[in-house]
Length: 476
Picture 1 (cartoon, rainbow, N blue to C red):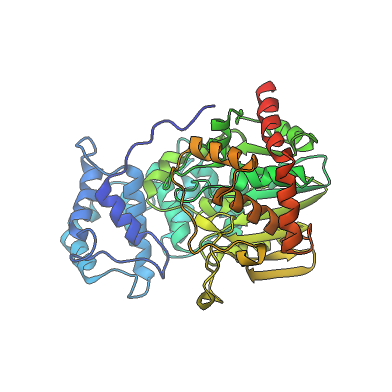
Picture 2: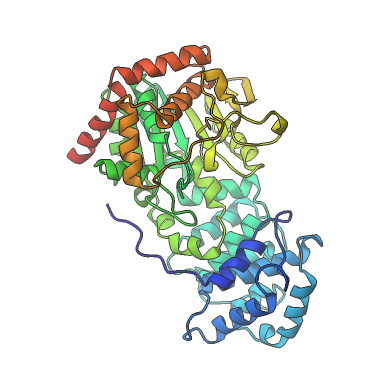
């Protein structure tokens, strides 16, 4: 397995500033002298990083690009999220130096200045940024061309970072969402897999850092019940660098650099019934952009779109996707319906995953998109509910956190749970497998679903799926 090379560390002062200002029109927190980084200090560091890049420590071109773009876009924000008085004062103090920034930095801070001309790779980015920096959205073609430019190793990192952070700040539209998705992996080349039904599971690529991650083991249980699944992701990714499905499989001894055709064979295999594919294989250019993602300081739009990547096509197709930020579930649901999926679920699970929490939902949170909120459709039937784990026989005062958050620990604990070891890890697997079976219409009610899952685990068939997966991937 190849992995990301060691990522360089972004400058901490600029990173802190980015974390405050590089969000949307309602969440951005302006910089002030009393709270957060001093805006004058940040601006001076940004200017020095452009004019004297050889002097360390300095902010990277990607950091500078995302910071200047965020400041530029915020000119159109409301008072609460636009420039603070301290930011205006800092810009005034640095006005001469800011106006003398070389291309493309002068353009990013002042989109009215002449657009930078470097080479044809950057041209789609500049055209897109001429709209984005003014707070405008893009049509599908322009967004896709710009995203493909970002994926080029020759793209200017400041322009690439500015595009990504700008799309996030302007709250990407459905057209932009689809453009990002298709630029990474074109949906028109999805490969067939010879099974009746396939569940496509989309989880955050940056993993889990607080709770045991049951997704893989849920897929094994459901495979033993003849519900086939495909998962996808990476080994590790900023900003969380959490435990991922790829890490767990690798720690279990499985090979993870599988082609899509090899994944299809595993899904079709009656001894296995599930598969995992790495972005490193199906979209290597997107995988190589980890350094850029690390330096923009916030999750890029890809953090939402990549979970919706569909790579194989069965006769019937189901999507189960975790989400965190309200609003994206509507985009995901529209995409699922336009792709004519047979069922689709959006789950606000733990850490933005599709995994339901063991802790009952506070009734005072009704109507809010808190953990365990799920909505979607099954055929013509709409689904919208706050899943209650007590209906499945689980009642925890708090959702238990993992004692050790490592790929090795999660691999061992997942195996132990599939061996029948009691505890919260087994309970998470049972709850989530049973909940999916009820929501997708495989079982009539929670009681039957839980009994069905427990019987499957007790037979050892789910654990045999893991061992068969390891054996078959090593044989490829």
